[in-house]
Length: 121
Image (cartoon, rainbow, N blue to C red; front, side, top):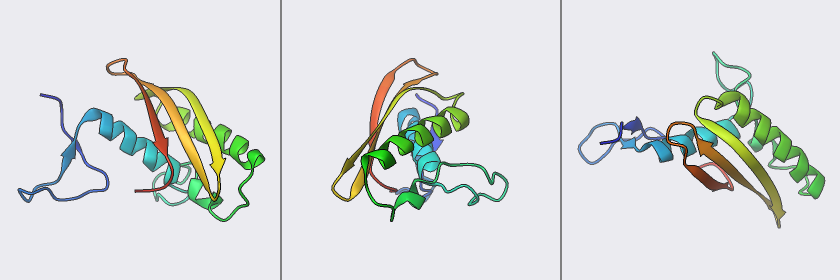
């Protein structure tokens, strides 16, 4: 059986214990934490995150999407370099939202994954 990881956000399962998840979901959860944590939010890691939430009220445009792409890729490479190899980050602006697609390889099992992010859980 796969090693269980604590689910994010922390919750209680049906048996009254801390909910767990599999490795693929855990990695996706870690990516979400990097994307949607603003630098300065974590007490012992004030530089953690890339701060996509700060872009919420900025005018949606192609230059913003391009800057976001660089911001996201560098943050993921910095904070999750031991867990994933980031292959590509694509940021697309559609109507009033940015859609972030992350293509990466899980360093543990070598599986390539593509995950889409539009906002915090």
